[in-house]
Amino acid sequence: MITPTFSRRSLLASAALAAPALLLGTRAVHAGAKGTLRIGYQKSSVTLVLAKAKGVFEARLNPLGYDVVWAEFPSGPPLLEALASGAVDLGYTGEPPVIFAQAAGAPLVYAAATDPSPRAVGILKPAGSKLATTKDLAGKNVAVAKGSSAHYLLVSALAHAGVPYEAVNTIFLQPADARAALVTHAVDAWSIWDPFLAGAQAAGAELLTDGTGLMPNRAYYTARRDFAAAHPDALNNVIDELNKLEAWESQHISDTAAAISPSIGLPPEVLKIWFARQKYGVHKLTPEIFAGQQQIADTFYKLGLIPAQIDVSADAWNA
Image (cartoon, rainbow, N blue to C red; front, side):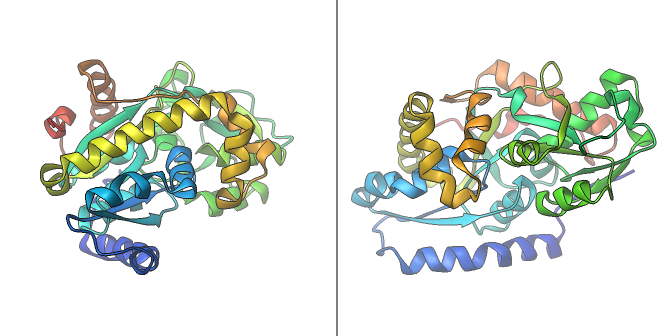
């Protein structure tokens, strides 16, 4: 049984991971009268990648006295470890990483949520694999990033197929290593999110199942509690800009793909596969959204994957 926690070592490692990007960003901005907003993002956070490329947060926040600094992370869990350690103030992750962070006592609040995109997460098998259904994963090696949205997809898919979670040999790998393991047949399947999902499919991997009917696959913008309390104006301005960008993206798929392709490292045509199954919209959290997140938290607790039962809505941002 695995109980992920944020150890002191992992927090320090995440802070070290973020440090180079944060230092580069600090040299590139002026000293703000109010402070600095340090944003953690992933390749899957397309709107943040676009915001960074266009400089829209800087244009909005610099006149208000805020500098903006960026740090990239390979997945949600290390990003939230950096948030917990104080290395970043705002981050974008899938559903489970926030739950793992809450269970570990991270000082965060839910600032906003996206619309669900269940087709943007999936379980892949190598080309030519004889696996036919999720039920065939019993006894097999499956790669997944621990505590990620793809981790919950694996948990949910197995439950729906009647396969005990313990019946699968879960191999915890970050996306780059997991893709290599799938290509070399070191693992039998890989549970992953976009754009890595689209990239692997374009290279020949086959979809065993996506998240349809298995999980909402929302993403969350979470902030350090102390930053949110001290700087609600910065967060509200960021959320407003996110909504503007998402509205633009939904009507300019090709332009968005071309704009962020260099940052993500995937061809625009591959990115369009991802965008076609992505829903657009950023919202403050509602009781319905919290109920869905609570269901995921309760599932992880029952499996022993988090150490204690939590109330996810206890970390709502009431600005």
